[in-house]
Length: 496
Ligand code: GUN
Ligand code: ZN
Image (cartoon, rainbow, N blue to C red; front, side, top):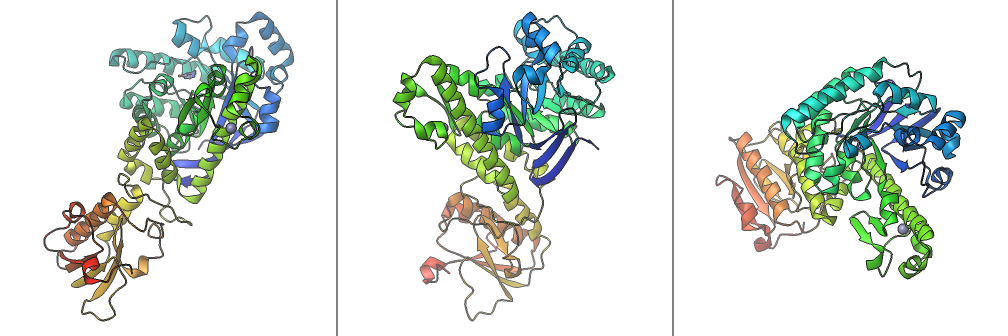
């Protein structure tokens, strides 16, 4: 039982939770995004992060503070919160990033943790080794052992009520990620960042991000709060939350603003290329692109950074609402359509449908919508899975239209692509309450046809007739020979 994390709502592997940060006296609602604040370059004043953007936790780098004399002395004297002018919770990173960039740093885990404690950090980080993607297995395994030693060193430091991160490494080897997750969860550390995914995200390798996260999640316990280190682009938040990540941090809002880049939920645009601003945040409502371009560098950078944060937090709220509505996969799918690399990530996510299902509440209060040309979704699979458990009479009509008023079947069931057949008694139960398009496309018809095949296979005694509304031959080819077909459009009985 992780005493600082409570899960309040689930949708698949995604959750809304609450992370208690005792040293800050703050409860952080998750999913949460921690803006990265560089203590030497305050693009946006941290106090404004709180007042304008509602940020209650940010992240900064203790190694930068430690290695800049003037800032280090101030941090030790005044504390981090006064130094930054931020009264929420502050997470500090350790210098592992510098380790990955420059190969060497001059502090140990014990030293940097004690320093983080001394400057008043609320959530600290040991010196893990962010092994890059695609290295050979020996290196990934050896560096993982170093990270595991760092976690043990961290656990041995007296950190009072400061929470401590237990980063999960293992490069692009899902089984090493799993082992790392299991080890991290066995310590009494508090928050579990999945590390070294920045190079994957920079390369738009979202399918690999999903594999790495799902590997780590298999090793971690379901009640571990999971942070995706260095992830915070609005385009991928829904996907990462759907994998079961709870915390994110973003330097992108500021770094991108520095070179004129404008974040959207379907990628990154260049201010130079925009004639219109496709956003309703305060910055975009009050400025035209030419106006932003004409500002001085500092002001343009601040305005772009503000827009970048507005879109990011708006997306985060949308993600949370989608979890509450039981509709997060629908949002992930929409985001996947915005960018090809995201589509690969979405497919990879659906490959793990079984794992997502394990935490998905079977009954949800509200509808979700499926757009019909999706790869198969857990809800459809689950409906098909239960067909075997239903009682089926000898002569069954499965129809896409209203049941005919007189017939000699033993029962009439309905079918609505992409869902397979169902008895009328289930029509008001989840997921059949979903809104689906009036005109299903071939993939949806095909999924429904596979449901008919499943029904016929599981209940071989029954003689089944399928009355469909002009389904595509490619979909109908999934229906076994033994099922009799009627085309409602030919019978003039469609649109029921
Ligand atoms: N920031 C981005 N990735 C990482 C990581 O793997 N480890 C640490 N400590 N910080 C990071
Ligand atoms: Zn905007």
